[in-house]
Amino acid sequence: MKVLLSINPEHVANIFSGLKTYEFRRKVFARKDVTTVVVYCTMPVGKIVGEFDIDCIIEKRPDNLWEETSSGSGISKQFFDSYFEGREVGYALKIGEVRAYEAHVDPSDLLDNFTPPQSYMYINRERLKNADARQLELAW
Image (cartoon, rainbow, N blue to C red; front, side, top):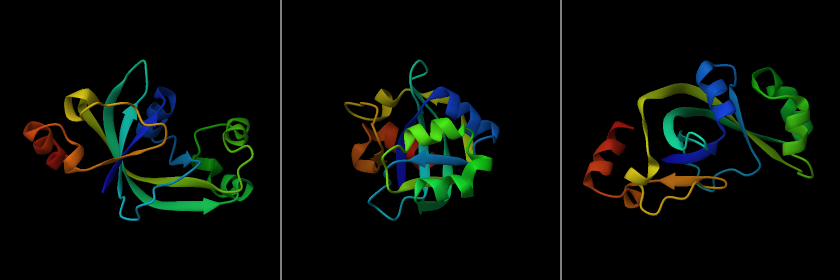
């Protein structure tokens, strides 16, 4: 199963350059069969730009999470603390293999009534717009 995450352009660049090896989330997917993240780069890009495999998901108290992941965080401790402020638990997706798409994809071409997700969006055949989109999904 794939999920689409909205990620800001700075973090997207750091993921695809290898600087950022963890993607942090306040909440994680309910489904346990998610193996791949499809990356929607937020505005001003506004496109699906690639994907990465999830090596594992780490769930810990934010202080312990930072201790384990800081070297691959791609963010400052201040940013991390602000992001997880007031949270008892935080999540880090350990980024596995990364695949940048040669051509960026307008999500509206693939998904009916696309609105960038606040957290995440499952990508499955039922969400895809038409037969051409379903064909492309097979290549994902």
